[in-house]
Length: 284
Image (tube, rainbow, N blue to C red; front, top):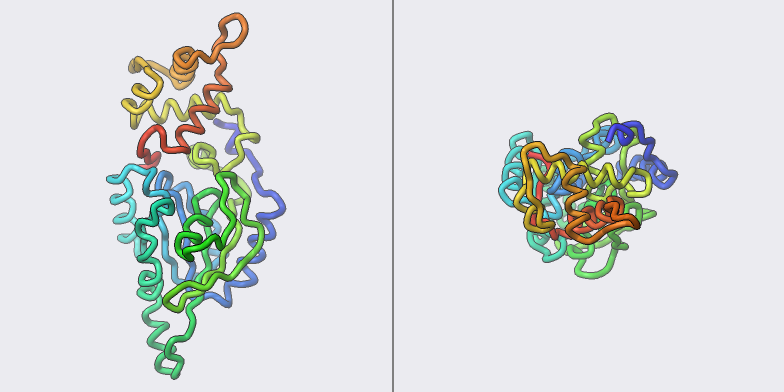
C-alpha cells in the first residue's frame, strides 16, 4: 500500500469546497463533523481545525450500523474525554438522528443565552455540516430533514455546491461537499480511506487493496471472512494467500486456472462496504 501514501488526491472540486467553507464560516454558529464509525480516526480531516476557525464542534459518528458496537462506544467515550460533543447515528434507520437538534442547542447553550440577553429569543442557529467523501453525510442530512434535501451516492464527490437546509427546532444547516486533504502521509489512513470508498478505487491497485483488507480482517475479524469465503486461516496466511483461496472458492478463475484476484478483490471491497462481512471497525 506504499503507493497510497504518495497519492495527490485533490481534484478541483475539493479546492472549491475548501474556499466555500472558508468564505461561509463567519456565518456559522457550529460545525457538525460527520465521520465514519468504522474508521473514526482516519475519517477526520486534519485540516478541518484551520478551515473552521475554532467554531464549536459536534462530531457525528455515522454509519454506526456497519461498525462494531463495542468499538463505537469506546470511540464515543474517547472523543468525549477529549472535550468533543458526540452524537452516534445510523442514517439508514435514522437511529440517533433525532438527537441532533438538542445536541446542537446544548453545544450552543451559551450563545443561545447571549441571544436571549439581547432580546433575540428564538434566533435561528446555523450549523455547517462537513466531512470527507462517502461518510454518509448526505444520507444523514436527508434523514434529518425528513426529505431528499441532499444528493446521495455510494461514490465520493457527489455533493458539489453549498445549500442551506431548514430543520425543526430553529436550526439551519449548510451542507458542504466532502473534502479530503492534499496528501496522505500515513499508510494506514490511506488504506482505511480506500477500504471504505472515500478514495476512488480507480486510483489504487485493487488487488493490493483487497489483500490488505483480507489481512486486516484476518487480524481482527477472522471468523467473518472464514465464514463468508469458506477459508481455512493459518497463522502465517498472508492477505494475498487468503484472497487467492477466496477466489478459488468463489470460482473466480481465469483461463488456465489462474485465480482472478482483481475480481475477488472487487467483490471483497463491495461486500465489506455493503456490510456483508458484519459490523466491523478497522481502528481500535
